Amino acid sequence: MWPGTWRKVFAGLSPTPRAALRLSKRLYGPAGRRDTIFALSSGHGKCGVAVIRTSGPASGAALRSLTGQWELPPPRAVTLRRIRDPSSAETLDRGLVVWFPGPHSFTGEDCSELHVHGGPAVVSGVLQALGRLPGLRPADSGEFTKRAFQNGKLGLTEVEGLGDLIHAETEAQRRQALRQMAGELGRLYERWSEELTKALAHMEAFIDFSEDDNLEEGVLVQADAAVQTLEEEVKGHLQDGRRGERLRGGVHVVIAGPTNAGKSSLLNLLSQRPVAIVSPVAGTTRDVVESAVNIGGYPVLLSDTAGLRVTEDAVEQEGVSRARERLLQADVVLAVLPAGDFVPEPCCIAEALRAVLPHGDLAWRVPCVLVLNKADLLEEGHREILLGACQKGVLPPTCLLSCKSGEGIDRLLSLLRAQLEQMCGNPLAGSPSLTQARHRLHLTSCLASLGRYHSYKSLDLVLAAEELRLARRHLGKITGRINAEEILDIIFRDFCVGK
Image (cartoon, rainbow, N blue to C red; front, side, top):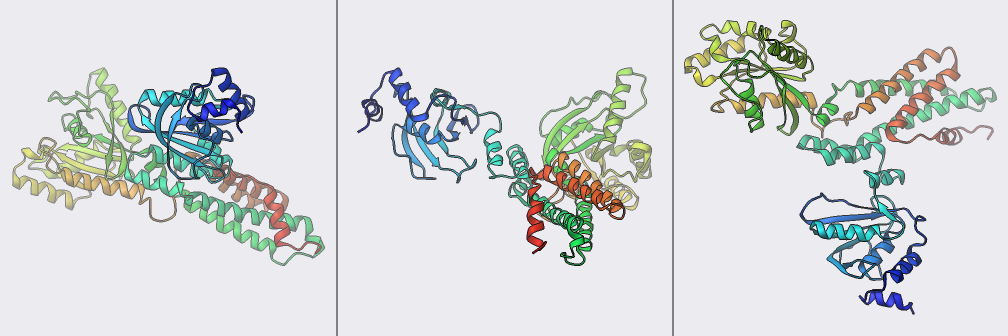
C-alpha cells in the first residue's frame, strides 16, 4: 500500500507543501540529477489550445504528478485528464495529454504533451507547476530539435529543413523546406560521403597492404573513377544559379526608372498597401523603400528607389547613388518608364531603358521586365503602336500598366512570376537544391580538395589520400556526421587482407 501522502495526492486532497516536496524527491531523485526540459511549443498569446511539451527521463514522472494518476496513458494516444498543481493539488485545467515513450518520439527520449486551453493564466500556471518539479528546467531555444539531432532522429540538413519550414512564408518555400526535411538533401550528401569513404578506404588499403599481393587488381583505378564521378556531381550541384538560396531568402526585385514614372505607385500596387509616399512632385523618393511580398508563391523583396536623373540637390544625389548601388545587387529589375513619353516615337524606348540599366547595357545579365506605366493616359491606337515596337526590338519582356486603374497588373505578375520560376526553379522537381550558404562553403572546399587529389595522386598517394579525407570531412560537416572508424570497417569488409 502507498504511503498516506500518495493516497492524499491521488485522491485529490491537498498535502502539505513539505510532504509534496518529499514525494517529488522520491519520484524524481535529488534536484539536478535529471535533465528534463519543458517549453510552450505553440505560439504565445491567447489561443484556443496551447501545447506544452516535455522531453527527458522525468517526463513520465512529471505527467503522473500533473495528472494525479500513477498509470501513464497508452503510448501515442490522446487522453482527457484533469491537470493539477502537484504542490497544492489545485486544478489548473482539463485538457488532453499524450505520452511518447522513447525512443519512439521526436527527440528519441521520453516525451509528453499537454494540450491545454490557451489562456495566458492557464499556460503560466502549468509552466510554473512544471518548473517547481525537481529535475525539470525550461528548454533553451531549439533544444528539442537539438536533442533529436543528438539522438539520431534528425540529420543536420533535416534540422535546417525543419527550421526553414517553420519560417516559410510562401508555398514554394514550404515545398522546398518539406523536401529537405524529408531527408532528400541529406541522403544526397550521405551518398557522396559513402563513396568518398569507400575510395579513401581503397587507397588506404593499397598504401598499407599493396606489397602483400592480397589486394584485387585495379583498386586505385576504381577509387580514381569514383572520385572523378563525384567531382562532376558536386560541380553540377554547385552550378545551380543559387536557386535554393534565393528561394529560401527571397528574390531581390528592384524597381527603377526616371522620376515621376510611377515607381512608388507600383510598389504600393504590388504590396497591396501604402508602403511608399506617392506625390506628383518629382524626386519625392530619396531613399530605398523595401517591402516583402508573395508573388506566385515565391518570396520577393521589393525595393523602390529614387528616380534616376541628374540633379543639384545633395540629398537627391545620395538617393540616386543608392539606387544605382541597389541595381547592381538586384536579382530582377522592374524598369518603369512613363508610356506617354514615347508617343509617337516608340523607337526612343531602348534609349530610355539604357539610362536605367547599369552600364547602359540592354543585354545585362540580370533579368529585366519593362513596365510602361500610365497606360490609362494613352489612346487605344498608341497602345498598339508601343506594344508592336517593343516586340520588334531587343527589349526585355514588356507590359503596359496603369497603377491608377490596375490595368495590366495580371500581365506584369505573369511576366514577373516567369522570371522568378526560372531563377528559383520548381522545388519539387529535379535533384534537391542548395539552401544554405554553409552548404555551398563546405561543398566548394570539398571540390577544392578533390582537385588537389588529382594533382597529388601521381606524386604521393599519402597526400592524395589526405585530400580525400579532407573532402570527406567537409561533407561530414554538412550532415553533422564525421566518423573515421567507417574507413576501417570498409577496409575489412571489402578486402581480404591476410585472409
